[in-house]
Length: 122
Image (cartoon, rainbow, N blue to C red; front, top):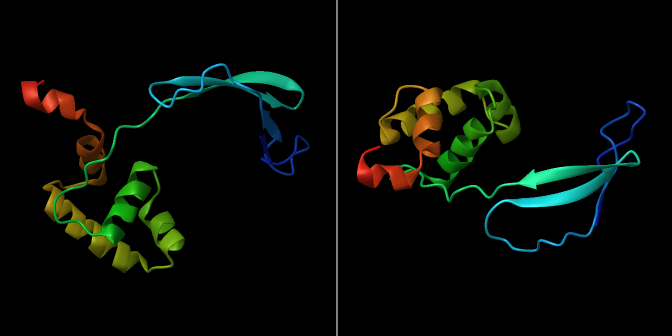
């Protein structure tokens, strides 16, 4: 499968081509080979755990949480969603209340903590 990621001459990212892989398992980390600009590189893919959104959050709030996890700023989230800064700020406030957090950093922390550690208190 070829991917068009742009060009090597500064007019965008380089074009890449995924090479056949011996590992076709969907479970666990996977290493793929990719050719970029004539050179072969290795790409590590690690499956992310299933997110558990805070109870009572809406699908729109899930999209905002996902954007926060991507590292987007409030301004970038607003631009992506075609919304005002005030709307996104209000939605973040609702998310914070439902998640019982006070900041984007705390939201990221609870969204990325390992649920397996909750049971044993670590």
